[in-house]
Image 1 (cartoon, rainbow, N blue to C red):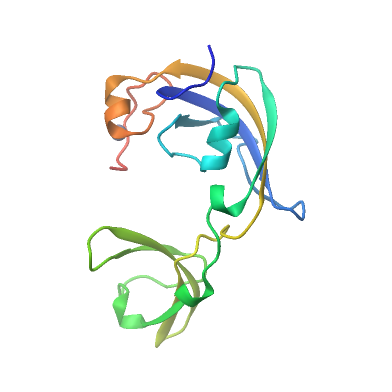
Image 2: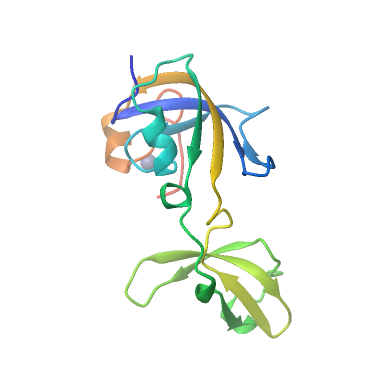
Amino acid sequence: MKIRDGQVVSIHYTLKLANGEVVDSSDGADPLEYLHGAGNIVLGLERELDGHEVGDRLTAIVQPDDGYGTRDEDAIQSVPRSAFPDDIEIEPGMQFFAHLPEGGEQAIWVVAADDQTVTVDPNHPLAGEVLHFAVEVTGIRAATEEEMEHGHPHGPDGHGHHHEH
Ligand code: ZN
């Protein structure tokens, strides 16, 4: 079985930056499951995995345009602390979803915060980085109809519970 659109693929992976720093890995955890062709993982990695089989090991060097995008420094904004919930402590690195005036949501990351002002960055923390993936394919199965409708996998047997909708 080769990886193609509509299949649920399991991979072990390590993600390094160009300087060798490991920023993410499935090491010591279950493999990552994703629905191929649904944009669950960065485009450049999905493209490299296409056509591979269980047991294959590969490396993929993904440029920002096919990864987490290029950085737009002008998009960094300061917003009043009052725009955030009172009952949580706002700290750098936290992620929020801002509701856009035109509808939909935009992920933002806190880069600085004090009592008055929170500085937020809509750039993904890995935007602008060249991504170096080392991947091993550990499983491939056909997606269920429900998984295809939802655009993401539902666990090893396709019937797992989840709440990210
Ligand atoms: Zn679902």
